[in-house]
Structures are given as C-alpha cells and as structure tokens.
Amino acid sequence: GYIVLNRPWAFVQWLRNADIKE
Image (cartoon, rainbow, N blue to C red; front, side, top):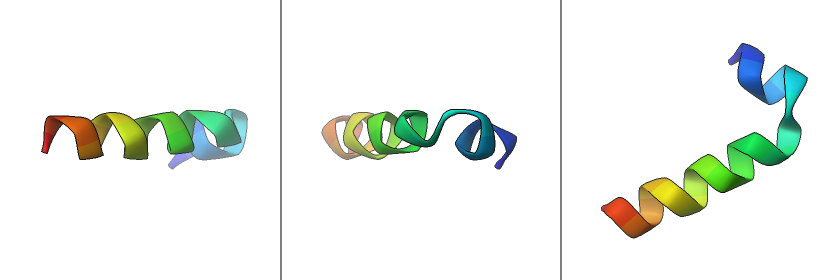
C-alpha cells in the first residue's frame, strides 16, 4: 500500500495492467 501513498497514479496503472492481464 506504500506505493499508492507514494504514487497515487501507480495504483491506477496497476488496476489497468491487472485488468488487461486478467
């Protein structure tokens, strides 16, 4: 969760990436 605090946009990128992979 520290990544979200450090880079809020990284969370959005992760969601999109996870969605594409899934």
